[in-house]
Image (cartoon, rainbow, N blue to C red; front, side, top):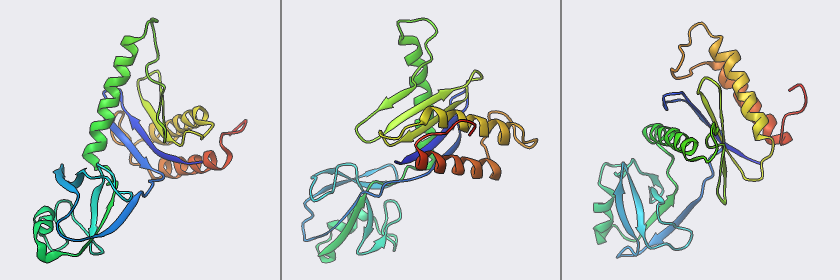
Length: 219
């Protein structure tokens, strides 16, 4: 089983901690002749596929490398705009590797804030008074689990849908937060967590959860 990532969001909706435990690498590389039979566009600081899925290449996948050399956002390794480079017939045949680009720090901050808002909306839409808000979102490839403390801190875990023991893991992460962040004299409430002991114990907890599926009594 796999646990993908962990997020900690403060009561104001700010992302104060994020850890990628496992990032699937869904990539496809293909050699193209001129003209390119995919439609590409700029999106944020990346070049992505907007039309023309084929051979494992999907809409939304970003250009990761050209002719075996990693790209730098919208530009090739030598600083040329990727779209301009691919419009030039002289550059063909060309080998392009596509894949899902990792989220940037700004994108993670934005998504954490968006989930904070959705959590509040979920509480308000509930037909019952005192709803806890969103505790789980399920897709075909992952589940998002959320545990909110009485003080409003949210612990979020993204995991394989078949992974068990996530409720226990969320509470274990809260315990680690209490022991190694809150008790750290240099840590300020609501601020980003930068503590080596917190990192180490979190990684150990994730390893135990992945291997055992859950936490046993007394863990």
